[in-house]
Amino acid sequence: MAQQVVLITGCSTGMGLDFAVTMARNEKYIVYASMRNLAKKSELEKQAGDSLSKTLFIKQLDVTKEDEIKSVVAEIHADRKRIDILGTGRMKNLVSTLVPGPVKITFIENVKKNDLGAFADSIDADADEETKKLAGNMSGKMQKMIGSESQSPEDITRLLLEVAATEKPHLRYATSKAMTELMSGKDAVDSCGALYTQRRLT
Image 1: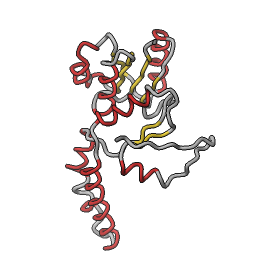
Image 2: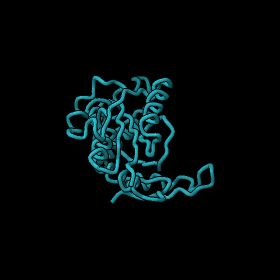
Image 3: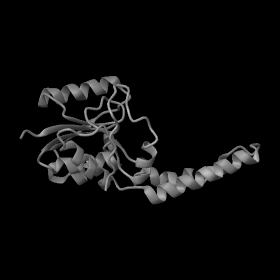
Image 4: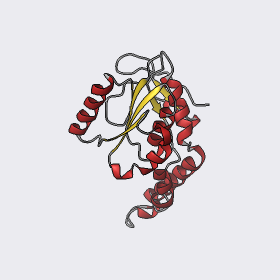
């Protein structure tokens, strides 16, 4: 079976990095791991190990820049003739949508340490008491959710690999109980008339 060609964005840290490294270690995939700033590629190179330049190739790609998107996609098509799987935020997705909740990455840790702790205190001093109370409640709930519901990038990668190997994947996959409950309140049919099928990571 031919190897699937994968393009993943945001690979300097977190889920993108874990997706890229894990898939590149699997002989089923050729991975193009991209990031906005190549100065931050050292951790990816370190974790890629023997996969680097064999099944994992690092590319510079800022998804807000159309010329960079076109250049990288054209390069991959020139080399491989296709892109089978695309993991990204802005570019067109070719696979199902994974809907994770909080993930244990540097960004979440920074939020816990900095933003959320000071969230309620950042409300204007002239705000009414009800607004201050709502802000405090929101801060507490967000802290609790991040602390109890956050998953590791490895958890999400396991589901990604399962979806990628599925011949007829579902449209959406929730990765936690909290996200399953959140998605359950959404319209079950998308704009094209297809059903949203939700599957929680177990």
